[in-house]
Amino acid sequence: MQPPSPWITRFAHLLPTAGQVLDVACGGGRHGRYFLDRGHGVTAMDKDTSKLVPQGGLEIIRHDLEDGSPWPLEGRRFAAVVVVNYLHRPLFANLIAAVAPGGLLLYDTFAKGNEAYGRPSNPDFLLQPGELRDRVGKELDIIDYFHGRLDDPGPAIKQQICARRI
Image 1 (cartoon, rainbow, N blue to C red):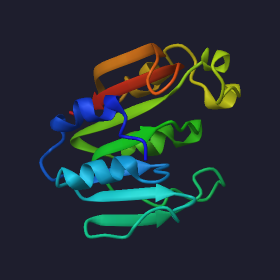
Image 2 (cartoon, rainbow, N blue to C red):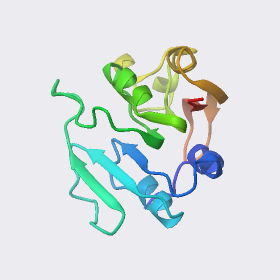
Image 3 (cartoon, helix red, strand yellow):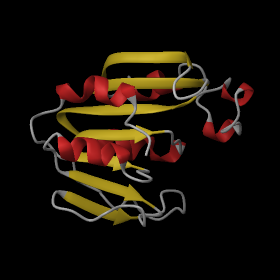
């Protein structure tokens, strides 16, 4: 299994101790496992949760984030909302609203220019220059932001942000 994103691990120490983490579009759960190992409770959400192994501290929510059904976590707040390699623009308001006071949004996904390196190449799944910063910075305080080429685990154009709700 692939290790957690270096962007996510870089800022994990900023989370409130033992705070609940929301792992959105969690896939096989690599980030959820990382935060469970750090003593956090994790809510893992994806349309396919078959690769997740139930265990103490892990809440699994099977939910299709793109079918237009209501956000299943309305009113819940998390010490961190983690999104890696996933983009569905209609979710931004829900993701930002799910960040508790003092909590973090940790987002790491592909941006325009990635089509030169493979998938994703569809513009619907690629952030425009500055898009992540512009969407998040209106409501959260940006701690760090990156837009550019990364070469590990392979070449890609990414945008990454760490932002806190004050």
